[in-house]
Length: 320
Image (cartoon, rainbow, N blue to C red; front, side):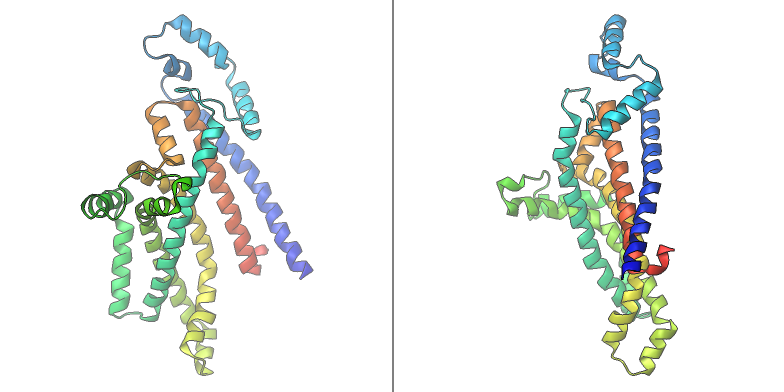
């Protein structure tokens, strides 16, 4: 037990050492991309009618006339302390705005992931058990449609049908939990189902593939020969082994859901991190864009770290 625990902590340490340069490279890439965007923070803050002298004064106040490497190190140091600066458009504290909006984006992503797992894994198992019959063909066809249809198109259909025509759910907006759990959850149904559609289809495919591989293995054939019940074979042996590679896929899907939430939040006007990023891009609020992109990178890297740890716990072979 002690050796196993030590090996897991070794994996965690090695992954953390790999995370640091990844995040640093991400920050450098974000900073560089923002610098090459046409225009500038001072020009956008003052507007097109501002004089060159006023722009020069503001650039000096904002520290934009300093060498780029000095600006980058200052921004990185402040970000490490939790200070992401202020918005160009309304001078709001970006760190505070992200802290207020990030929980809603995480909530939307986790609900969508839970729905995708609850839908995808049972359908994938059902498809594999009924390999090469009508049930398998139906599940495979439906999952193919889920992968093919863009999320923004599904979102518009959902709003038109379930919100505007049937009136089952609100079309846009998400009220705060303080105003009532029922309205809060009800307003998240359509965004969560829309976001989960593609993820559920992908989980169906990977679960089906993993189950088929496990069912064709020698230990499953031995279990059949020993006369074990189908339930034991399908769920105790086959599904358990099929879920190990699915953990890695779930990590990738979670990152994809977090990125997809940006688009879904824009369609449903969910006041999360995605809406904040889209608004900042449209307003050319470079400081906010830079800060939100940094938070997204950190979240993606942390998800990858958790997946690696999960794989090490489930499959000791990966600790090597």
